[in-house]
Length: 315
Image 1 (cartoon, helix red, strand yellow):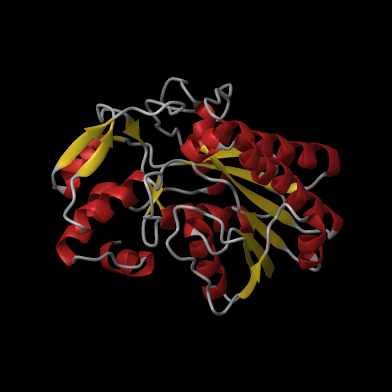
Image 2 (cartoon, helix red, strand yellow; image 1 turned 90 degrees about the horizontal axis):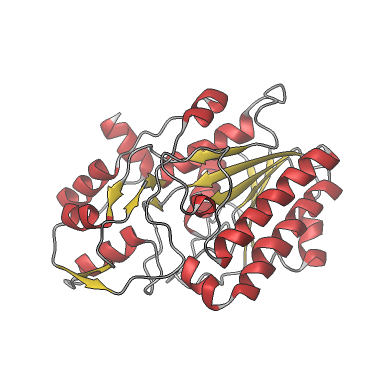
């Protein structure tokens, strides 16, 4: 297959590119290299590298010719930066997503896999199911849900095969480490390695469903390869989480170094916990890596194995 991965030099997108290349697909990796939490960007040397902004339709549209699968991960992907600059979040997450969908439609792409976020649920009670009403607490979640609505519209109106995956807190190899708004697992590991106290936002009792990037990649692959007869898949939204959560304080204690508390942040949910019934039924997907196992491996080895090595050793 010929595949496009937007955000292909980022954390999750880079792992999807790796998997596609490993499986023998022809891959174009598109990234603007603008993510503020990345110290460096990962470009798989066996994929075609395109440094481009998805907001520029005329420059990305020709890349979609003769493409089979599109994995759309490019986004303004952090809550607090989006609160500071909602216009930029709207431009990338709404206009950029519309550009990707339209380019895919114009070029007859077989299917688009859209990466969305569990922050769409806001204050809904856990466990979180896909049929709950949206409760967007910040510009990031508003703009990502707008992307979901565009995906649904392109499916209903134009018949495009589009799948939306809502990720819960993703961690793993090559996770962003830079700055105060990187994902919490990455921040804590950076602080641990630097012998600094881990900075816990608020009381640390907020709970998150931490999902390993390997399991996220597997969900994307299953969505891409599922047969056209799987009608429940297309136009649908699917949680990608473990179905078990930990408090931020518990995470800090797993890593086992000193911590301090810093002020709470606005616009963030208190608890996330995925109900994964739907994705298990429709895609036969299930998570395989737990946060506790991964942290234990990190502490024992001093560095983490690749997902492939981890699976070979532990499963």
